[in-house]
Length: 171
Image (cartoon, rainbow, N blue to C red; front, side):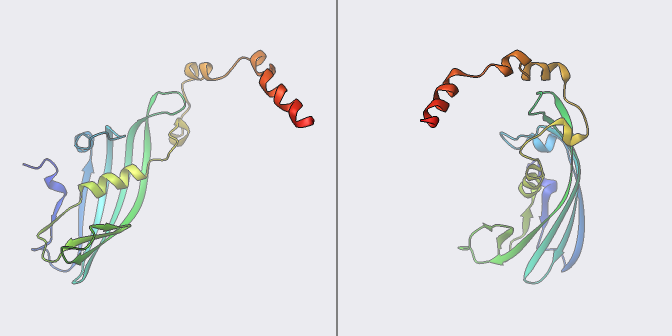
């Protein structure tokens, strides 16, 4: 049995119109994605699923937090996440591409749509490149920061290599 079966939406029996689905993404969800930057978290995802005869509009709204390692002090912290993403699903022939940016293609007459990967990608893309305690309104571990700052006397000493390069520029 598929562990992410709750993230499979029926297409064939669903009438046209707007439908709403709610999901709670937690540690178990993230454990199904190999090499995931996120292992722990709790994110509420609301999906507005607008099924039309020729396409489907999916509006994902999410809010919660994920546990990450601070890039500055290496201490774990809870990073709050919140956002909204839209994905269009179009019906196509079997030889059409599967994805094109924010457009996903499914075969005409498909019975179901698996959205677990989309939920995962939306959450991961909401994580900034630089993850620090500042983003959570917290302070970094001061003991660890001591190792990152050089003593004042080392800052004043210039590297002799740079002095040699500066003399070349003067000539």
